[in-house]
Amino acid sequence: MTLSTDSHNPIQVSERRPSGIDVCQLIPLWTLSDERGSLSVIEASKDIPFDVRRVYYLYDFTGVKRGGHAHKRLQQLFIAVSGSFDVVLDDGRRKKTVRLSRANEGLYICPMIWREILNPAPGSVCLVLASTHYDEKDYYRSYEEFVAEL
Ligand code: TYD
Image 1: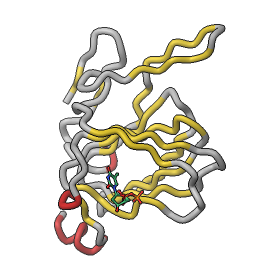
Image 2 (image 1 turned 30 degrees about the vertical axis):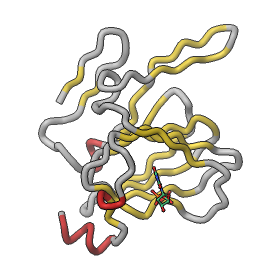
Image 3 (image 1 turned 120 degrees about the vertical axis):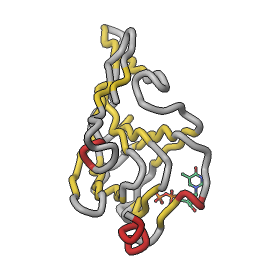
């Protein structure tokens, strides 16, 4: 799938792998930096392949692992708007770790990815754009159940 955009970055999501960790890509965000500072923009369904139905953010990390679940249908974009942290992605066959450390890029996470957030730097803030409203029924909270479903 290719989402073209007039003004921003096109998203290239391979058609050969509609799901899995290879689809989970770092997306550079259109950013204007000048003497006043920086401004980054995300336009739903243009710069990311979904409409945004929910926004939440994680902060005041204590060091205890966050995540530890997968979603059936939810698509997300994670952005380290401040600080840095690791996102461990697992599609049941392979894992990869992506460190988010810049406010001008976001990590696209497709459905059916087990994820954990580790090693946050003090003061980090993880902004999440989500494709659906909150729905507990969309979660796999058990890794065994997640793998069995794949
Ligand atoms: P969860 O998605 O499990 O986050 P994490 O894995 O980072 O801890 O959410 C934690 C709790 O917050 C869980 O009980 C569900 C609740 N929650 C909502 O009520 N609405 C939301 O939009 C989100 C993201 C979580």
